[in-house]
Image (cartoon, rainbow, N blue to C red):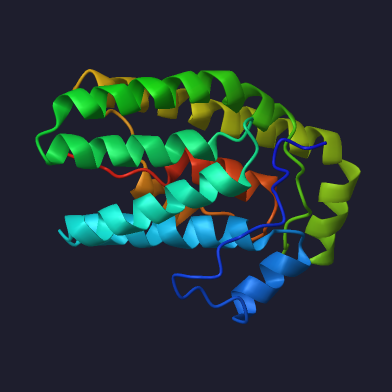
Length: 205
């Protein structure tokens, strides 16, 4: 069983529209409503934070936390991502002790889940611009998948350091949400879930 297995339950609230073209593609690819809802809430929370609306960011991240707790397996690193963002909000509100506890818990979950998550990623074929590229990907599938695992594993290691820096209130050394905007996979597979776990994190000054 993949670490990305989720329960059949997903909250039918908060206005998520699963009839959009993107949602239909995600569902057809095997994503559950909880996967779609979590990503939407995390993106909305990051946008709200960037716009200076910490109240809306808190609402989005709190709801994403409930989705993760109710729907995701204990081995899913997305549970840690929500805690990081909640910790950032707590620190911004002057609740440093609460923030430190959330960061420590996030690190514990991250260390216990991310290596397996990367190793067990199911990678779907990428959309290519030509039949030649499709044939090359099929011919060198093992190399392609190996490179993908290595690249995302490196991102996960950088994010582990970023979480640690948040815990110790040190300056960040890597891009997070802004990197998601540029590197978000166009296909709905496990690579998108793992990169979401890695990069849907607030970039706090």
